[in-house]
Structures are given as C-alpha cells and as structure tokens.
Length: 300
Image 1 (cartoon, helix red, strand yellow):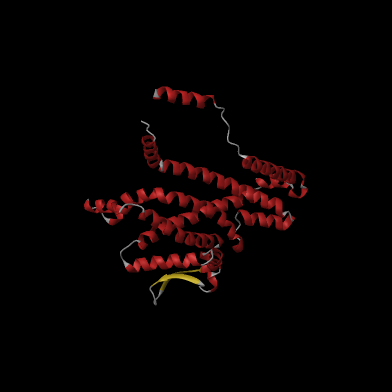
Image 2 (cartoon, rainbow, N blue to C red):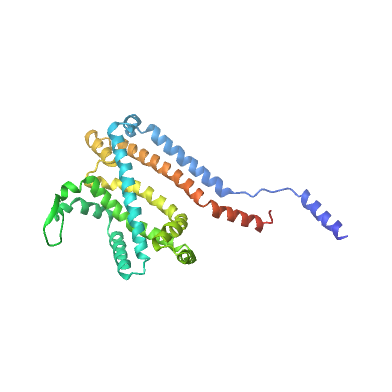
C-alpha cells in the first residue's frame, strides 16, 4: 500500500511542468556590459587621436624592444635579490638567537616602512653622501676604493632599490610558509641527526614551497610593473623609453598604449606560468581533496 502511494506521488511529480528559475538581474547586467563594450569599441574606432598606426609602428620599434629587455632583466635581477635575501631574513626571524631576530625584524620594519620611490632615489643619490666605497681594515689603511657613482649605476641603483624592498616582503612570505610546516617534521629530521641547515634545505623549505610559490608569483608580477618607477632615476626601461619618444613627437597616448600592451603581454605570460606551477604543486592536495569529496558524496 505504501509503495503504491509513493509511486503515485512520484508519477504526479513527473507530470508537473518544469519551471526554469529566472535571472532578470543577469540579463540586465549583460545588457549593460554589452552597451559599455559597444561604447568602448566605438571610442577606439572613431577617435583619431589614438593613432593606431603609430601604436603598431612603435610596438616593435628597436628602442622600445631595448626598453622591454631592460624591464625583463631588471625584474629578474630584483626578484633574485628579493627571494634570496628574503629567505635568509625569514630564517633569521625564526631563529632562537634574539640578535638575529632583532636584525631581521628591523630590516623588515625599515624597508616596508619607507616608500619604494624614496628607496630608489636614495640609492641613486648615495654618491652625494658616500663619495667612494673602500675595502680595508676598519679605522685603518684602505686596500681598494672605487667611486660610488661608478659602482652604483642607474641599473644597480634600480636593483638595490627594488630588490632590497622586495626582500622585506619576501621575508614575511617565506616566514609564513615555513610556519605552515608542522614542527614534527623538523623534530623528526633532528632525530635522524640532520643539521639545521640540511633540515631547512631538505625537509622544511620543500614543504613550505607550496605556500610560498603563489604569493611569490604575485610579487613577480607586481615587480614587473614596479620597474616603471625607475622613470624617476632615468633608467631606460620600457616606460622611460616610451616617455623619451613621446617627449620628441608629443604623441603621449599612442606611446603609453604601446607600453601598456607590452606590460599586459608579459603579465599574461607570467599569470599562465603561475597557474601551471600552482596546479602542479597542489596536485597532491587537490587529489586528496577530490578523493575526500568522492567519499563524502558516496562515490567510489
């Protein structure tokens, strides 16, 4: 009897028409976006001042490509300084030695507390307060000396300004990654008579990398765009090169579009690489999560 009632209810539900849930807000939002996109396309197509001919003409111009190369080199060098120094600072901040913790904490406080533009200008004008850099015995004879202006060129000043600032942020990222590793891992390594340095290199840092890599990739993309600040010290990177060109022909907007296109291209490439690295490093975690979800919904 019960089975007959259940079957009759199911049959009744099956005969009812299926009413689709309506989403009027989606249609309104889509219409607004289509209108805005049409307005943008119309603006680009009808505004002669944008000079698409100049944009395509300067996109692969030799000086622009040289500026692009300087931007890539500067990004790579500054990030290398930031990652290496940031890792050392993170280990110092986690040390049991209060002196090391204090030095690392002071470094992070100082470089995160001052604008990066100020740091760039400071390194560029260092020669005004430190005319020469010498090597010798403290308060004694000098064995070697070199002019600060010769040693700290525009490119070196940019690497110091960007790299040392980045190290302060990377120190916090690496410290968070190391903190995410269970302390039992290090204790197990010590039980196997592994030295602290070997424990960090073989046990802690590889496990912390899964937490460290995504924000580091974000920092890399940010660094790519921060190189445009080197405009203040006259380093001929991409934006400075564009500025030098439109200073001669007064075509500011087309040249800024050229620089923006190259920044977008590089950012897109780095974003794709970041996604692939994150997917590869999270393979084990995602696999375990998928397996848990399968068990949770009664799968195999």
